[in-house]
Image (cartoon, rainbow, N blue to C red; front, side, top):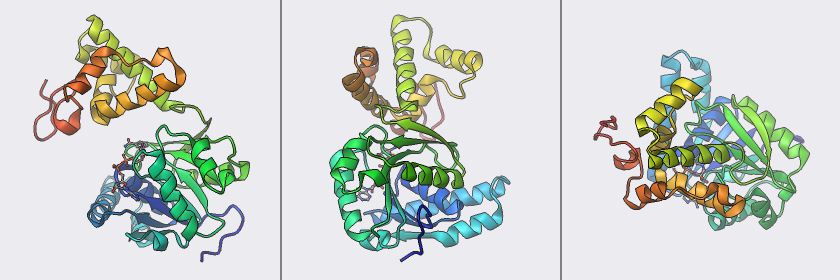
Length: 296
Ligand SMILES: NC(=O)c1ccc[n+]([C@@H]2O[C@H](COP(=O)([O-])OP(=O)(O)OC[C@H]3O[C@@H](n4cnc5c(N)ncnc54)[C@H](O)[C@@H]3O)[C@@H](O)[C@H]2O)c1
């Protein structure tokens, strides 16, 4: 068992080695934490190992990561396919399994049976209720949201989400952890879409509304936001990157929870129904060739 004193985190276990989990494990090890990455799939764990090592190497090559830090991060990383082993020494468990309340609660219940009693728990959910998840577990005061952004090793923000029962000590500790991972923290009281997804959903929906009304072409709407408002990506470029189905799901959730302002635009809905799901399928608002290069 790790020698953990009050509020001190030494060992972090990340659950789910997909897009987000592998990135969270990368920054945890980069922050000097003993880090264990868990997934139910051996193949995905192997892919995650390759991706993390590759991103560390690239960071060193570009002069953005100190070679010593990269070497140390590799030493601190462990990959596990057995959940009990993965969490048995964890001071903090961060969950990044698929976005299903039932799956997340069921996973945390298993964690609680095998992890040390003092372990803090955090979820990287995009939209599910931290309060509801915390209430289903036996330690709502030691449970919070840590909302990372993709790609995790590059994006600087963590939204630290306080559920109704999340304790102040938990929030202080998780803020320190995120900062040691190289992130800046914005604390958010639980609310659908937190800060970022809520604003972003409206921008994307409004962009589709303008496209439907014929205000400007998709490419010009993107150019206007980049050149005139200094957005690093246009709304349609971002929607294509994230996936139209994923963005529509967020919007539908906000519509249900926050009301009419968030009603999905009918053209947006049609694009999803037509299978135009974004870069991942080669066509969304724009069309891409087999190498992912935009061709219209
Ligand atoms: N992708 C994003 O941009 C993004 C951003 C912020 C938050 N999130 C949230 O992060 C979470 C993970 O999203 P993702 O995009 O990384 O998904 P993903 O599909 O890329 O990865 C999920 C991983 O979980 C694994 N998994 C499935 N069941 C599991 C279980 N029972 N135990 C352990 N691992 C299991 C899968 O094998 C897969 O590797 C979701 O809640 C999502 O809403 C995603």
